[in-house]
Amino acid sequence: MKKLGFVCIFAAAACSGGEPAGEESASQSAGAGVKVYALDCGRIEMNDLSLFTLGEEYDGRTNSAADMCVLVRHPDGDLMWDSGLPMALNEMEDGLSNGPFHVSVPTTIGDQLESIGMTVDDIDYFSISHSHFDHSGNGNMFAGATFLVDSDERAHMFRAEAREDADSFANYNELENAETVEFQGDHDVFGDGSVIILAMPGHTPGHTSLLVNLANAGPVMFSGDLYHLNESRERRLMPKFNVDVDQTYASMDRFEAMAEEKGARVVIQHSLSDFEALPQVPEYLD
Ligand SMILES: [Zn+2]
Image (tube, rainbow, N blue to C red; front, top):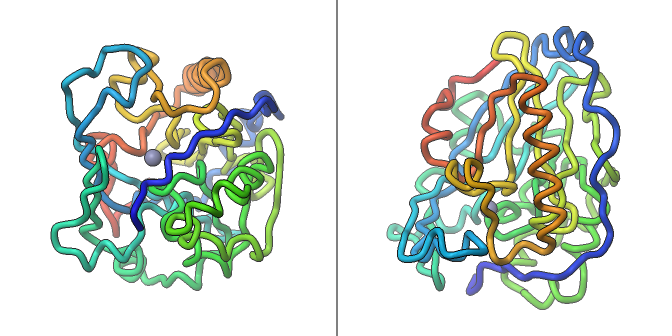
């Protein structure tokens, strides 16, 4: 693991739009029995925040970021959304410095699952917001689950250039042979409107966000890396390494319209304050 694998490639194919994300009445009843756990899947010190905007807004600034994975427990199966930084980092007491980033893993996915009486083998479905190193870092851990993936992202993560980034690729290469469901546009994971993977391309060609409609907590939208900081959402800022600027703005528009229409709680997965505001395992939202 020598590079963070933030390799960019231009993708002309747009996959925004898609099916409407569940009827209001269906989603409210559908959330019964669904639980959401926010897992700590690592920490990232961003030593040069200027990478995270096209302009000069972040010049000279740093940021401490979370790296959140989300476990969704549904009566019909368990979904792991994103897999964070490689768990091997947990054995490195001081973490690892890597260009403009310092990454560390204070606690493991296995230990957090154990605290709620689960193991990795219990995960039925695995999906990622996108295939960057800090989201696919334990992909192989979930190669026994059914891999739910946007077809543009699957093509991106298994393209020749991704394979050449050997250290990052080795973290998720086994997903290539996992039982796979590919989709374009939004994907209703359980077919009842409760858990919907949202097409939000631009950061990568097949970048996605996650909407979970909960019976008590209401709708919650997990950003993936549509935004990295709360401030980026407020100011509509995107990283220099996004693959498509126009697609990203269109995804921001769609995400915000949906969040407003649903009155959703928005969780930015790299926001430490958003992570800390969520119940910590073994507690959950339902
Ligand atoms: Zn990320």
